[in-house]
Length: 274
Image (cartoon, rainbow, N blue to C red; front, side):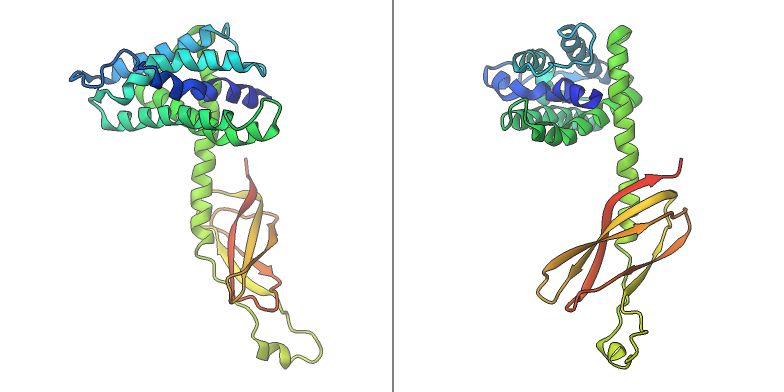
């Protein structure tokens, strides 16, 4: 429940993002301001926004406990503190990109919350991606730019940053694993091979070798095999691998359909070796 409660809190700050902007609030920064903001000034504004938000929840994990009004109030105070950064001039273009991305996650949260009631489980599912993106950005603000809060607020921030680290690691694993799966080529038996096997001893499965050239060792790995026919119609099957160490090559087999012309592998789930 911790992650769900945090989603309802800090990641949902955007509930009134558009409404606030529409009322003319720009975080006290004029759109035509010529001032160039230093990293310290930008991070200070982000810190002020988080402190203002957490002040409404008395140092808790920002959970509105299903109360949309509380959620909206939290959204208002944080967004009002930082909304002007979208129009500000930065000394660091990379920080500017991250801050704009942070503001975008607030707007995405508004879109999600506007589609569901608080008792709809799909709300929490759709918010996962927004929450994860937001915590990755908070992690970057903390690690790369020194954002910090102190006291109980820091404890809440630490939890969010921890999730951001987990998401970053998962994204790195996914990118590396996807890269090796895209190189996998299946060899399938020909119709001629099966016709010359009257005793049914011929292995009719398609085979491929996965070369785990990544740095990651997997305790288990579940893949989706997408089988395409000549009309590019897809059917899916599951491929399971008990373990696959870094640097190891593993043979996998997939039973083809009658009209299978191509097979592609994608990630379903995995467990890394600790």
